[in-house]
Length: 509
Image (cartoon, rainbow, N blue to C red; front, side, top):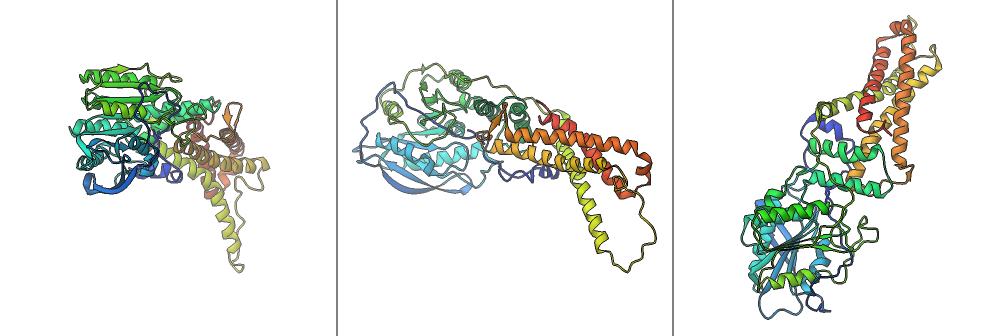
């Protein structure tokens, strides 16, 4: 969510709420890209030779052993030079994802360390930025110990979520000489991710209830259920304690970090910190992670601009002579303004939602399952067992209007499909950062249109079944207890489904 973007569930109701739907849940906070940049100051010449790569390992927070690569400039420098530790954005974060960027820095004279992000203590529903910051500081210590690196010239680079990590690390140790960030968000992860979801959906031509269902309802429910790691993390107090020189960069096509809001927020925090050595830079034509883009920043192609790291390397090299004065480009324009997310109302709380889901699935699926079990029992009943009495009239039964039987079956089938399908589709969109909503018709993804039709059918069918039951109260009273229970459960599910589907947007235009 940056993204994007997770950990143990916190209660049995919560488990019920998401157990059948969590398999595809992925990172809420994606890290994204950059396009052609025109540097304000040229960097050193880019050698053709490939940087030298050396495998390394070091011990991070809690004793976790982390593995990485150190990329050194070709040829080896005559004197120790600057060093840079790169921290990835949200997600698994293998070192290979930063390899091309690290090589670009190394070719420009910066010894660069990249490493695989920890898996111990970092998941889709749980992460600790303090722990990740300690990992980054361990990497800084390793780089400072190298004879080819000047120990007082080692800094941190962070992308997206990594910007939250490196800024926190900088407040914990003076070993960090400087910071470089790409696509840093000044908002809380939940607010930033909700804004990004809306941008991707609107870019796909989507309007209507799905926007609020994903941006608002889904994000708040995921956070409340403990499925959105660090959802309320506030980066501002951390930036207010950063005193090292900072180069903070955003692409003009950043669709994930709300750059028009984030850049001023971080700049103002640095001002409050009394930091007089920061550079706020806007790079034309690149996306969230400062990579190239073919779709206005909404794609994620893995390609660097030809001059990638030229300005940044020159900025790092100049730190050896004089820290930069305060400099700030205008913040990139963003489409729409983010909104704070309201607290959940009582009926939106995780226990209430879990109870509603239990009622819906029990009522909708219980109706056909109990009917099937009863038919199976009749078929396997021993032929020799005498039947002393005729069964009482059931509702619905062959003696009742055919429309009643059909309505009950339709309500059960479409109610189940709309409930599970609606939650599953929203989780899929959250898992994929809303990048793959599917074909769109009349401003709605075809999947969402189908789910809305199923929801309408479920409500209508349940209403027909309820009306039939009222008109046949005598038959209902004479029906076996099991038939009354299964029909009652179905009608209760239909009644609960209406407000539930309204809250999730399935019954809204």
